[in-house]
Image (cartoon, rainbow, N blue to C red; front, side, top):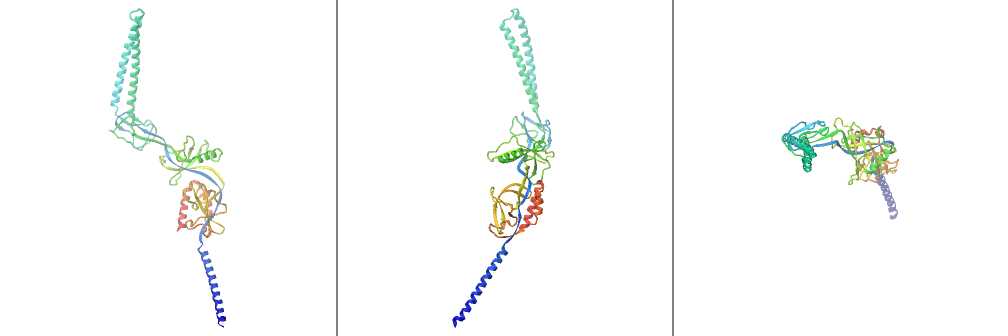
Length: 411
């Protein structure tokens, strides 16, 4: 009888325990579903896009001349304003000419003396020539007279050279601009003593219109660029030269187009980079030597390029770059990619992705590989497609919009 009472009680307890366990599983499953992080994704855009090669470098003056004194003396006057434009041949300094004027006068006096000596020797040689015919003088006396005449003639040449040297030194007391350009700070003032061949320049003149932009490019990229020019992938202007667009460090576009030159390049053995030079007009002298610039070189059209938003790409180090994708099970996976060209807001992916991958574009810092998420399509796909077709020169404004969107997502 006691067993019959206990058995129903045990069966009811087991049933309640089973129901409780099932409820717990259902709650855990629901909780996991509720905890799946909502994230935004975008499909890979497939477009024909213009490709640009972006190089960086700094501006350098077309010509630079250090003005140095070629004679020693005291500076009497300076004839220019620091920072102003000077013309070739314009006088810059006046060095005290007194000692050089005296040297010139002495050289001219020596010339006159040599001319007088030469005149006397010439007359003697002529007389001895007539007397030699009548044997009134010896052959030796005649030879000596001829030698004295030729020596006097040589002294005249030496005296003329001394006069010329004195005139040059006197002219060097007037210091002129060797080129047209902007002159910098004067290192010496009136009353300062300067010496011939001194190490410190009086001032430096830089020609800034046009101006050079020296750019760095790897040897492999340079060879590839030359190949693409030969194959017609890079567009040339009417003079068969490559035009480049220049962008300031703050993203502002310089209005003048530069011309890229490939002659006279050299390879830096420590970096493996080649310095190539672009020449650009600088009529208003907006570009100054030493400014950092980016140069954009059009390389043609890439057919069927895979594009992903720049804010979805993560650079682990110099060689590893990856993106997060959402697989068919709505789990996060990591894929390493090779980045090609860059256009406003987008990177061209050369390899590492499939065309049907879903690219994670939000909550990137919160996810991990294998994590289940709730994918939400990004809403501004139309705007992104418009960005792809934008002029590359609008990259700065596009980057600013991308930064603002990232801040909003973080909030």
